[in-house]
Amino acid sequence: MGKKCVMNSNRLLQTTVTNVEMPYEKFMRLGACVLTEAELLAIIIRTGTADNSPVELGKQVLALPSVKENGLCGLHHVTVKELMSIKGIGEVKAVKIKCLAELSMRMAMSRAGDKLQFLNPSSVAEYYMEKLRHEKKEKVILLLLDNRSCLLEECLLSIGTVNTSLLSPREVFLAALKAEAVHIMLLHNHPSGDPAPSRQDVLITDKVKKIGSMIDIVLLDHIIIGDNKYMSFKEAGLL
Image (cartoon, rainbow, N blue to C red; front, side, top):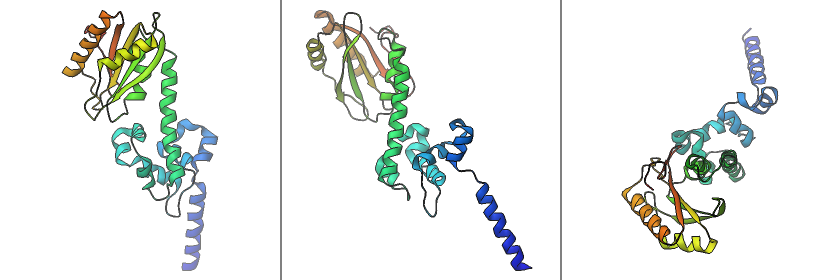
């Protein structure tokens, strides 16, 4: 009698395991929108270990400190080494996950690019938001525009520390003159997520504006990118 109960129990367990739908099959039947974040990652991860299914590995990725703190956006911050610290995720799987994060950023930029107008601060901020909001250090980007406000060139002027950038007006106008730009625009990010300008931001913007006015190169705007928010000197009436 006891042996029969054990056999019935084993059959029940096997039936339960069989009835658990794998993420790939679930995707094929219902589409991506019904999958959890762990299941979506499981499809990228593809194979598990003896101890953990691909879904369990996906959950461990989501539990990494950078991802847990920032949600899926944290995949931009997590390193390949951190991903490989999870048993069952080797270099190939870690690279796939990082490429997934990069693709998501480029898709967001592509959508925003359709609405990009350099005389419209919100459209410029939307376009560069995904490119800059995940950065851990300040980056200063110079946009060089022609007399119709069309982009001639985009220059990365400097990469600063966690809380300050290094910007030289001399570099700004050397690049502008070389490209024969008529208008210029500055962008930089605040890793803190708060786009409020610092005193240094205000001073350097004023300096670039004054120098530009002397040589007929107009500073159209200086936009500071925070975490899903921005600050425009033009919109704030500071230019």
